[in-house]
Amino acid sequence: MKVLRIEHEGLVLGGLSSGQAGRPGLLLLHGWPQSSRVYDQVLDELAQDHFVLALDLPGIGESHGALPSAEKAVLADLLVGAAERAGARSPLVVGFDVGGMIAYAAARDLGARIAGAIVMNTVIPGLSPWGQVLSDPRIWHFAFHALPELPELLVQGHQQAYFDFFVNALAGRREAVGEVYREAFASAYERPESLKAGFDWYRAMPADVSHNSRPKNFDTPVLYLRGDADGRTPDDYVAGMRAMGAQHVGGGVLRGSGEFSPLEVPAEFVRAVRDFARRCQRP
Image 1 (tube, rainbow, N blue to C red):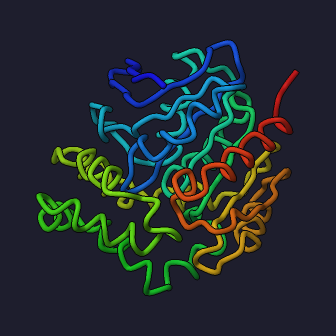
Image 2: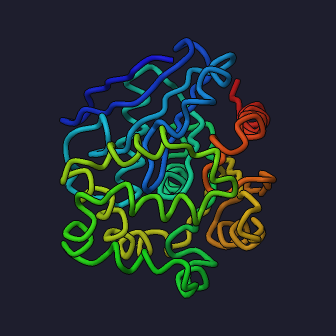
């Protein structure tokens, strides 16, 4: 595993990499409030047969510079471009939470440039069951994070305490997300611009809804994975993607896991990614 630094479109994108550039590419994307460190237990195993990049999303952790938009389609284009620049051709894009929204955007809009997408533990803005999920009181933070300035004012300087609330709520096995990772995630959002970048993902969701609500047929292979800790199944999420044009989409469950699958069930995560990658591999 090596520290990664890519200069692309006026930004510096940092993170971790493992494997040889000639192998099939994997682009791993984190969500909120994590960093690329969430993948460090699976990188070297996946690198046995892939060239693996785990990037800090723009503005987070070792990634510096601000994008003009936090829309997920914009982020998808930037991050796939950065992976290409690093030597990962036609990568399989894997993401959870906000990273899963970006992976879906890549599948929808950049199918000619990627092998496929794995979307994990997230709801796609504008796709069923978006409205149902937002009405769940446990998802209160979507509205709070979308407010201008107030989230930064209240959370700055209290990142770890605030983030710990979400780790404890979303992890199926809290002990798997130990203090080292909790501190690393808080550190990744320590800069004011990093905290703003994370909240901007939520502020851009109305634009994401507008973009995704336009039906578009696409044949990029998509796998929707979900941990079973919260009792939800992949079925409604798969149906929502299919209804909006995903022609090759299926679902799967990572048992014993919540949102932090690469840390909670690393062996099962690696197995699922490898199995799907084999199905997506292009001649």
